[in-house]
Length: 102
Image 1 (cartoon, rainbow, N blue to C red):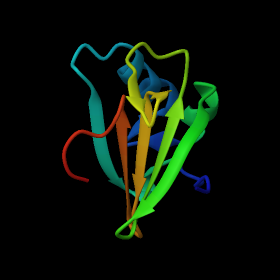
Image 2 (cartoon, rainbow, N blue to C red; image 1 turned 180 degrees about the horizontal axis):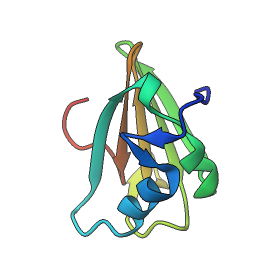
Image 3 (cartoon, rainbow, N blue to C red; image 1 turned 30 degrees about the vertical axis):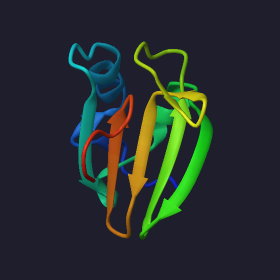
């Protein structure tokens, strides 16, 4: 994953996006965007550590963990709470994971 020059996620600043995750009252949060709309600065700001990655059917999935976020899931025996699914043109971000299709 390379960082883009855009400093927002879905029109939100990195800080606003992080707040939408930290204060998420639902079971989770998911957004799909064009890759040109996304900066991954929020991963650094949340001090995320990459836990696992895999590629299946043209989609690359990245799983991260941040102790700054409350919600968690266990994937392959490891705690994760940020899930990115990357295709040629789109990026889906899920917290704590992506539920359903992407």
